[in-house]
Length: 426
Image (cartoon, rainbow, N blue to C red; front, side, top):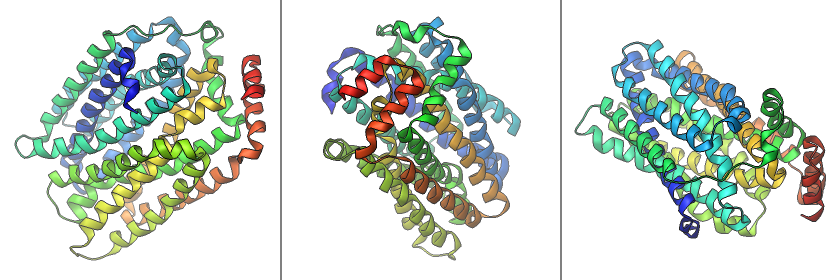
C-alpha cells in the first residue's frame, strides 16, 4: 500500500490531506464541547443544525465549484480553500451565540466543498495505473481512519492541560500546513474534455450519471446507511457521554476515537480482501450490518444506570466505524469503473454532493429528534432508515452477470464514445 508514496506529488498531497484532517478532527471535538457549553442537554440539536448547515454548503457548492474549476488552476483553488478554512478556525474560539456558529460553519464548509472534489479528481491523474490508484484509495481511507482515532486521542490529551477553545488553533495550523504542501507540487492539467460546456450542464452531468447507472444508485443508498450511523455518532456522542453516562469531557474524545479505531482496523485489512472479492460482496453486507448495530444501541439507550454501558458504547462506536469503512473505502474504485475518465471530475463532485445530501437528512434527524423525542426515538428512526437504504442498494446493484448493462447505461448517459469503447474491452 505504501509504495504509492514514492510518487512525490502524491506524497505531498497525501501529507496535505493528513494534516488537514487532524486539524478538522480537533475542530470536531471542540465544536461538540462548544455546543454543549451553549445549549447543555440540547447540544445534539445545536450540533445537528450546525452539521446540517455544513451539508447545505457541500450539496449546493461542490457541483458548481467543479463546473467552474477549469477557470481556476486546481492548486490555486485548493490553497485558497485551505486559507479560508484556516481563517474561519481562528474565529471559532470567540463565538458566543449559536447563530455565529452556524454562519462560520457555512463559510468553512463551503471552502471544504471546493477543496475535496478537486483533491479527489486529481489523484487518478497523478496515479493513472489501476493498482496504484486502488492502493491510494485505501491509503486515503486509512488517513481518514487514522485521523478519527488520532485526533480524538490528541484532543483528549490536550484537554487535560488546556481548554477546548485551544483545539481550534490546532485546526488552523493543520489547514496552513495543508496549503503549504499543496503549493509545493505541480498538479497535472485536466484534459480538454473537462473544459467544455456550460456551467449548469457540467454541474448536472455527474448527477445524471448517478441516476442512470445502477451501481451508482446503489452506492448512493449505501451512503445513506453510512450517514445514518455516522450522524448518530458525531451528533450524539457528547449527549451520550456527558448526559446519559455522566462522564467527563475528555471521554467525548475517547468515544470518537473508538469509532476511528473500528474504521482503521477495516482499512488495514481491506486492500487484500478487495483483491480477491468484488466490491459488491463487501459493501452490500456492510450496509445490512448497520441496522442490527442500531438495535444494540437501543438497548444501551434505554438501560438504566449500569457500568457495562460505557464499554458497550465504545464497542458499538467501533463497529459503526468498521462497517462505514467497508462501504466508503472502495467508493473511488466503484466510481472509476462506472464512468469514462473524462467524466471522473463530474462524478466525484456529484458523489461528494449527493452523499453529503444524505448527511443533510441524517444530521438534523439525529440532533433534533434526539433533543425533542429522546435518543431512543432517534436510534429507532435512523436504524429503520439504514435498513431501508441497504435493501434499496441490494436491489439496485447488478450482480457480475449483468454488469455490462450497468456500464452501457453510463456510456449512453454520458454520450461518451470513449467510454463505450472502454466498456466493450473492459
